[in-house]
Amino acid sequence: MAGHSKWSNIKHRKEKQDKKKGKLFGKFARRIISAARRGGGDPEKNTELRNIIERAHDHDMPKENIERAIKKGTGDLPGVEYEDYVYEGYGPGGVAVIVEVTTDNKNRTIAQIRKIFDEHEGNVGERGCVSYLFDKKGYITVNQQQIDELELFELVVEAGAEDIDQNDSGFYEIFTNVENFSDVKNRLDEEDIETDVAGITRIPSTTVPVKNNCGEQVLKLLEELDDHEDVQEVYSNFEMDDRALEKVEAAN
Image: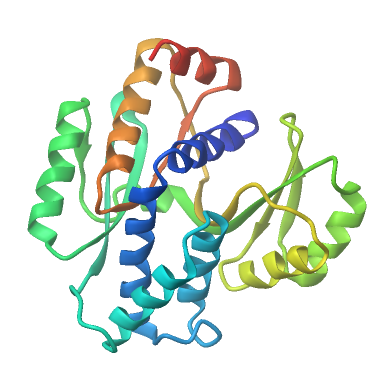
């Protein structure tokens, strides 16, 4: 996911999610319930909850849905208890895959996740088998037409960003540590700078190039995992340039 592929893969996942907002709202609700149960219902004191709510707002999740999920998490409203889990494994071509889930039935979910991996020539591995290949970071993209690179750099670094890159797709990529993500995002909002992608993600330290049929198999695996109702996020270290990604998508 370096260069072209990092932007392409994250943008690809965002576009897929935008097409199924009803299901996405349900996923956000589960994540909000879980975060509020662990750290309380005040976003100002619960960074995890604040980050999830910001993402939910970015996807136009209704305010009343968010508030109801928070109350279920804090126990002010009755609801199902959800737990967060992370599963790791390998997909076609040896690409690393991380799946973050929020579920009320761990046994049911892991059985279904294993089945999806098996059906797409992959397998679930032991805890830690691929997570060392990823760094957890805040990730924000900004259209280059909105602001000069130097001006943006000074703005976000002052707010706590670690780095900023300029890619060939017309977007700046801003990287932060998890703790400073909200500060950087809020600073951009204060300056009325629109963001296209903004959230906590896992950036691979090494990538695995995939081509042709292998690339198609990888995308099918990731999309089916992402479509599962308990799955919150799917990450992989596959590398595919824009043209190859568009070709695979056009064929499906």
